Image (cartoon, rainbow, N blue to C red; front, side, top):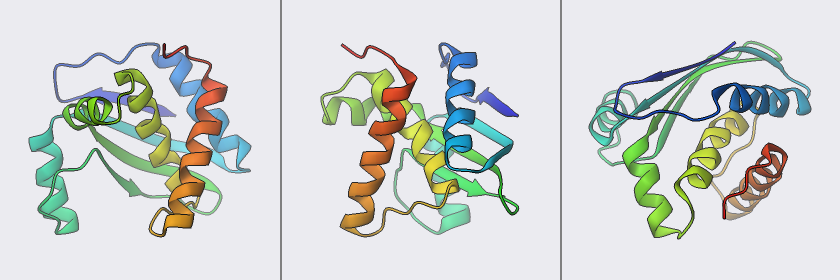
Length: 140
């Protein structure tokens, strides 16, 4: 089950399509969908989580808590809509494209992919792009 909740003035478009895409991405990795909860929030909310749970006094676009068990993917993903909007401007991409990248980024971490080294980061970008191509949005 995939659940979307909102702690900010934000409305996620095409939720059913996104849920199918996320589930298909998990299945394509040979894993099983458990319970995934997305919380869309603002910078202040995510900053508090970052300080409290990770000890990082910085802004970030996403924090994920992995509760996976065996081959089943479970977790909570918190996304700062403000940070995603700012990153979209910085990278000169549409907001929805950056949002979808962040949405699937958390799932790829749950599937075992890391992004600490430059090789891992390059692979993560490749996997994000591959997953996003399957979503089929026109970001122009």
